[in-house]
Image 1 (cartoon, rainbow over the protein chains, first blue to last red):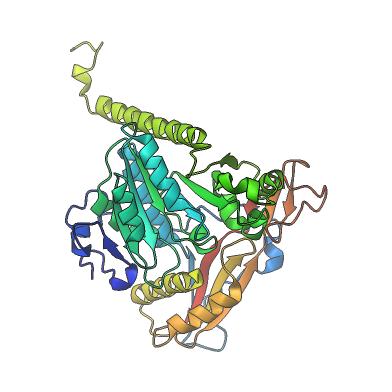
Image 2: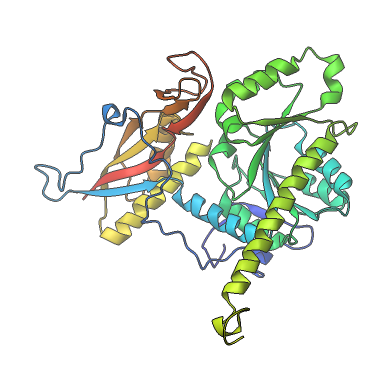
Amino acid sequence: MCSTCGCGSGEGTFEDGAHDHARAHETGALHSHGHEPALAHTSAQGHASDVHGAEYGSVPAHAHAPGLDSARMLRIEQDILAKNDAYAAHNRTALGERGIFALNLVSAPGAGKTALLVKTIQALGEGYPISVIEGDQQTSHDAERIRASGARAVQINTGKGCHLDAHMVGHALAQLDPPQNGILMIENVGNLVCPAAFDLGEAHKVVLLSVTEGEDKPLKYPDMFRRASLMLLSKIDLLPHLNFDLGLCVDNAHRTNPDLAVIGVSALTGEGMAEWLAWLGRGADAMRATACATARVERSAAVPPSLARGSPGG
Amino acid sequence: MHEMALAEEVLQIVEDAARREGFRRVRALWLEIGQLSSVEPEAMRFCFEAVARDSVADGARLEIVAAAGSAWCNECSAPVALARFGDACPYCGGYRLRVTGGTQMRVQQLEAE
């Protein structure tokens, strides 16, 4: 059990190729327990105007239940995901401070996430440092494949769990200690349903859809496609052998999410990789620039006024 | 299913309140679940009953209050009701919709002994 935050073995186990789970709390580099989520807060999210909120029942907040003197009503007003969102916000801040561009890679099982990551790592070369957090119910097969391609990886095994959450990712970040100004790929458990609800602290969700899956996937799993910023259509080398209607798939994707960017790729042949790498590079550069700008502002704020350029004393 | 993880979060919120307010049992619990949220209400009910066993919320009556989904239609430049992802705008029949409400999943209140 984690003696710092009390999470038990049910939270998932971690494997980084060299050490076991106990290491997750030694460095604390990116996972601090100093900022416990303030559970008494209500979240701003979800308070957007409900068009017909009154019709669907506002809950009466009685001071006591009539006729039952021993009973009392307590208003709670708390988001169910408040704790996860707090861990995610902490992850996001920590990653932002280090200029790390983090992506949450989601798909159905077998769409080709790991194969694409391997290809991406090989193609990026020395361009951007890249590290990976892998999520699966069991085995470290995917983390081992990533390491064999030259990038560092930590494997989270969720056991019976169907998704990664921000707490698990926080622990993995501490173990992985990703390099500054790099790219962090979080390969989620293969599942188009459950991971949608759980913010991990990423900059974007990227959804992978392989051309063997059917054009109507974005309509069948709208929540996931709505939350993604980019859809990667994978295995496009197989198109000559399929009756896949590319235009229809893109239309369906935009029906669910009008702002969804789409790139077709093949990890096998390399087709589309240039466009995917360009998208990655733009995001990584922007993250790096923001981190540098923030650092500059913080440094200048720390300079005493008497030493500031242009001041009478300086 | 992820409703199990969410049910555990609900129980955690209830147990935190029990510690804070000093009550020992929950008679009833109200959840607000948006039409466009990630929760299937009956799955949540099933999971909560399972996780609440032997806890301060064991046997508590679970009230799930549905909150309406809403969106902004870019075609009509107007707010519209949206009960389900995949529904078209009720006025123009188009899909240029941006969700504006109905994704919440909240613990609203509880009745404690």
